[in-house]
Image (cartoon, rainbow, N blue to C red; front, side, top):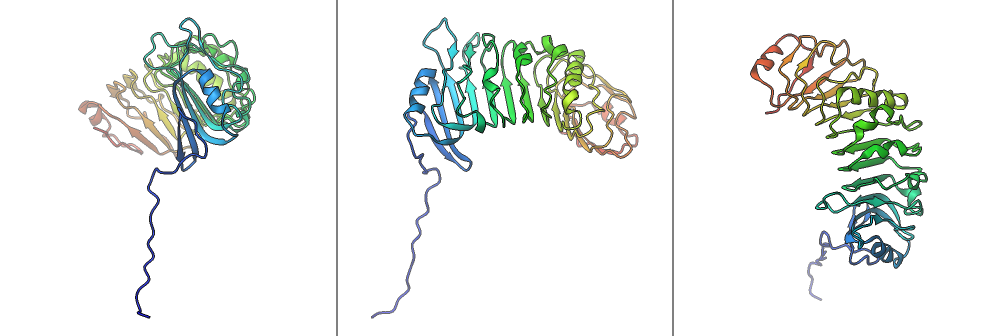
Length: 321
């Protein structure tokens, strides 16, 4: 027998060729490193429910639904058991971005009943929720970590949120009406927030202070990231009591002057973002602290203001141009 070399040929499985175990057509199903992700675009709630009901019960990583209605005078009304027997870790609900005014959306108390005990992230984008009489559908979301509302008109409904013990992140961004309920903003007890993002809501100084007082009732010693980007602030809100903050963003406001009492932190090293905040002057002691390290990010700040920072500071200031 002739001697030779034995070659083993290994054919790599092409990236992206993995297929879902069941078909969600016309929705798209993708296999991600975290699990199955299903995306449905421009379908009615009834169509979506038919698609999910015809599949066997599956644990999904995420479900993204961009929904439409066949009734131009009625809302997009989610149905009971909207996902059939499927359970989703993350749920994203979208209304068509092109709609003006925003399409109305209502959610049945039992729309996500089967999935609720598994869902950690729930997000609604570009929908009008003014016809949602309550948020009882969230009451069984016992492990909900993240709740987001983006580009929502009239978010006064925030006062109707049920008790969400596990909540760690609340995002309300680019929405209207939040200032109207700032004085009665829920303190979210017993949840202990770690991340609060309130960007682009047109909030004033007094409205932000009211919200921070309410949230502080439960989360003053747990909040780590706070963003008030792109509001109507003229001063940096006082947050000295939030001892665990590591990131604080007040960029894209009209904060002309930082005085010595503006920013006071007590114990935690922190990154402060003041990009495009229209700052014209900074007092020499504005960032002074005893044991606290500041990393302050500026962008679009005048040479004159830069020069004023030549006084001794106990912080690092990377200027981002």
